[in-house]
Image 1 (cartoon, rainbow, N blue to C red):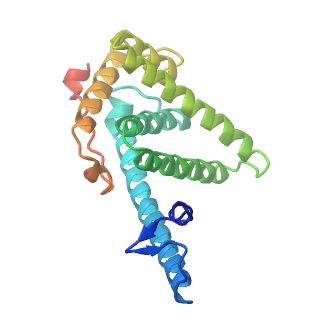
Image 2 (cartoon, rainbow, N blue to C red; image 1 turned 135 degrees about the vertical axis):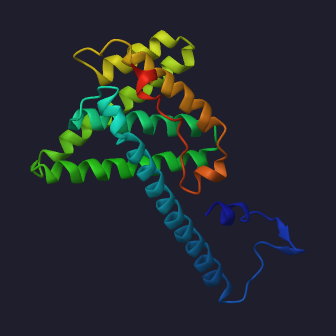
Length: 216
C-alpha cells in the first residue's frame, strides 16, 4: 500500500502523472501481482522459519547436553535448551534490518505452536492452555533478556549465573555452568560469522559441544 500512497501526489513516472488514467484492467493486475508477491514471500519465510526452528530443536536435543552437561531431561530442561538455542539465533539477527529480524518473530510463533501442541498432547485442557502458554512466553523472554544482558555486559560471570539460575534452579554441578557459557560464547562467534543468506537458507551452524573430557 505504501507504493500507492507514495504515488498519490503529482509525481510523474515516464513523463506521465501518477494520477493519469490507466487502462481499466491495469489496477487489478498490479494489485494481483502485489498480493502474489506478498503471499509468495510469506510462504517462503514460513518455510525458512520452520527449517530454523527444526535446527534449533535438533541442537537442543543433543544427548550430550543431558548426559555430559546434566541438563534435566524433563519438559523444563528441554524447554530451556530450546530457549537457549533460540536466543543464539535471535542474538545473531538483532542487528539486522527490521525486515530480516521479522524472521525471528516467525520462529517464535512456530515455537508457540509447538508448545501449544505439546501441552495438548500432555492432556492440558483447552481453557488452561492459553494461561500456560502465557507463562511459557514470559519465561522465554525473561531468559532471552537475561542472556542478552549478560553477553552485553562482557562479564562472563553474569552469563554463567544466568545459565545456572535458569537451567539448574536446584543447583548446577560444579563447572557445568561455565562449560555451557563457553559453548554459548563460541556459538555467538560462529553464528556471527555465518552469512545472512546462509541463515535464510534455513541453516544455523552452532559451535560444537565440548568433548566429554573437556566438559568434565
